[in-house]
Image (cartoon, rainbow, N blue to C red; front, side, top):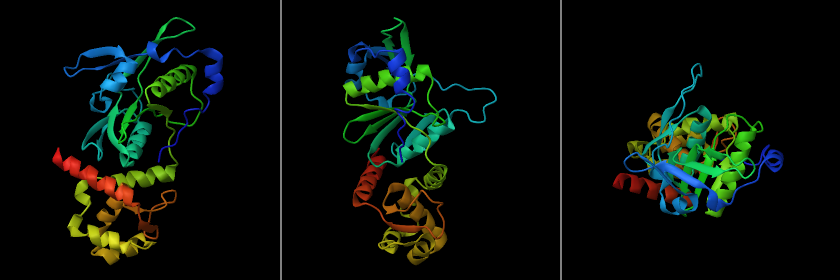
Length: 278
């Protein structure tokens, strides 16, 4: 689940304090194959560069005293690790990793640079996340920890990035944290995102058949076979969308589970075949 707050608290600040430069005046800086920094016009780089394959252009800061520091997220989408710099970012990584339309993910792969039309200063911004979709479009995103209105610098950057992304068919968003219950449920399901859980004990087909009609989670797991073996298969199917449940309420034994969309099932199967082929 992606919640968009790209306009929250931005319009009044942006309209008052800055003008957005032409998209052709925005530059992109990213790490080349040998690790050296490369700078190109954003309009050219967005077409030519696979940002989902790049390493971070800048490290995530380690802040003394903060309980959460940089870490790694193993992505079911890419079968590789994606770095994150905060708990809020990790939650958004989980949500994007679960989206069947997402085919690529990376962290801080590009720095955008532009000359501010008002002050004449060169300004820069490094979005936290990049996601590539199956249709070739892409998302650049930041992951604020709260829904509070953003500061002036972030508001300026958001206006510029939104315009620059729109010019090349991309999207820029500020993604607010999801509801705590939703986040907890997705975090639990993410523990079963690895393909090894898909057909654990050879129960995949039995699990899908057990929930062909809506029934409580534990009852369906018991109907599919030995409960402790079937539950990981159920959770993996809920993660991938082959089964569906209301994640806005706490996930438990009485949660009603039903068949998911056929599109999600097909996308999930194709994605895992590609992963095994790598």
